[in-house]
Image (tube, rainbow, N blue to C red; front, side):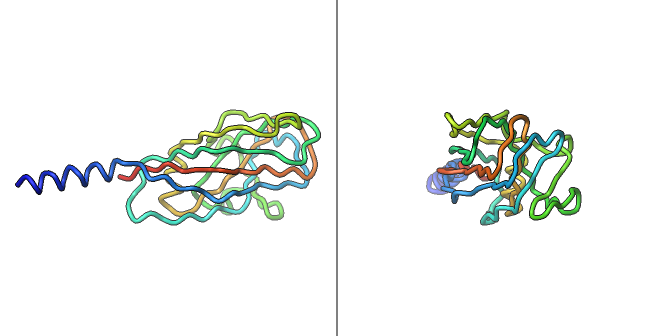
Length: 164
């Protein structure tokens, strides 16, 4: 009986222990960046290894940096678990979606030529849903600023996941 209780205790502890995964560097590139008003722009999805057990929480930490800036830009990051093709407008390789219907996953982030890097800590139910489905679309809404040939890099990202 003691061994069964010990096994169940260890099993419960393993399920509650977080799993840490390093994520590949990714980027969102734009030929021209300008305030997008009430629109969010999404690029291709990031494909994830779908977990065999359900995910309860996701916290992603790392840094974002903007390259090609000539002036400051302020953006808000968004995520979605569903393909934007059915609900949004295709613009070349991007999708434009109505911000009011989307899920923000960050506060406003400001990048400038003098300070192009920001630290990120992202946690949202939409990230949990996306991980459970195996795909996440990352998008952004430009609140202020403009530029040409701007790339926002996500580097050193680590996902801390707890399972159901």
